[in-house]
Length: 211
Image (cartoon, rainbow, N blue to C red; front, side, top):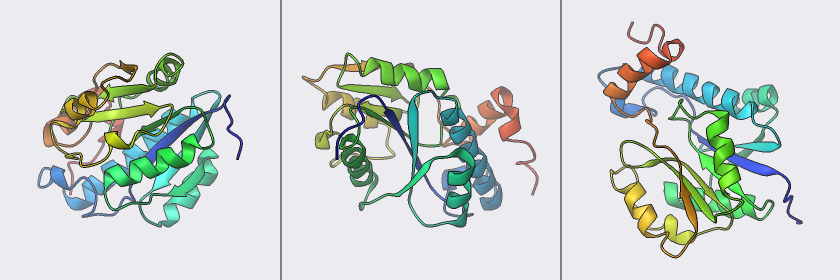
């Protein structure tokens, strides 16, 4: 298949908003039901942000089947894809392999960082005009966004996912590669992150402290 070099592709990784399966590190600060509701709002917020990008094809890559995905695909005119792989690294690499066979550059992000703006994503795509990789660090030591112009398996294999060294380890594996670092952002993993969210984006947390 010929590549669509004039189209940037944004990969959004998402989990279904099922209580007890998402945002589990927020327990007991939030109940399982409220954590799932927060996750649902974060997914919607992410897709709304993505919909504001110009000249960008948004692809929603999901971990499991759920009726909600079809609703979102229709609402936001996005394409649905199934994640493949045993761990996060395998799933991300598989997505990059697929997308970069169809486009010259791709950016991947999850739904845990509501502070990602259209400008932030666009700056990632723009940086790939001069670099082979771009990374948006997370303040907890991971990253909120990664962009590539070609698949790089070394960035995903035997990585300590979920730990505080993911960003540093990824950077160490980018030696010899032209890459760009974006502004660090916070993602929503811990109770203190929710407290910050309540102050900066209160609409995402309305009624979540009520059981």
